[in-house]
Amino acid sequence: SMSWGGGNGVLRNAAANDLQVTALSVPGLSVQVQPGYAFISKFPYKLAQTADTPVITPPSANPRMDLVQACLETWSVTIKTGTEAATPSPPSADNNCMALAHLYLRPGMTCIKNADDGTNGYIVDARTHV
Image 1 (cartoon, rainbow, N blue to C red):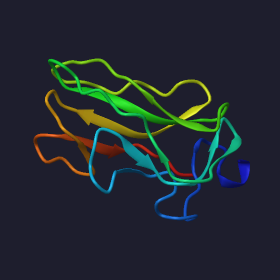
Image 2 (cartoon, one colour):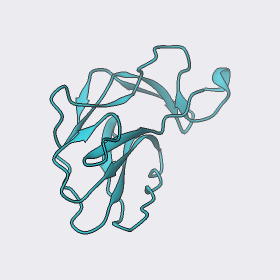
Image 3 (cartoon, rainbow, N blue to C red):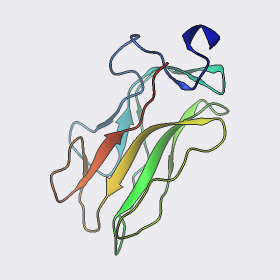
Image 4 (cartoon, one colour):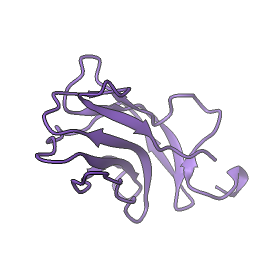
């Protein structure tokens, strides 16, 4: 970890899409996390293969921002649910976890896309690099 600056993050210049969160090829209510390498809490982390998240329930009354995070202790990817609000903010990553992306979710949405289309949910990259 110290060779790359000692912080949490995806290895810079390993591959452009390491641990990138993307919409499914046919957009739905879950997202994919690409395989890759990172350091979390000064320890190496590896996601060996593409991982699909569980289905995400859209908010009911106001927008919400959820967090996609890589968790060192379980070597997994999890979703941390945010709070609905007129101007939502994402939750912070749990201990020994690293933020990969924020999901901006809208009431009535039918899918999550890579970019904002004004109607559905979308992905905001939150990866840091070391």
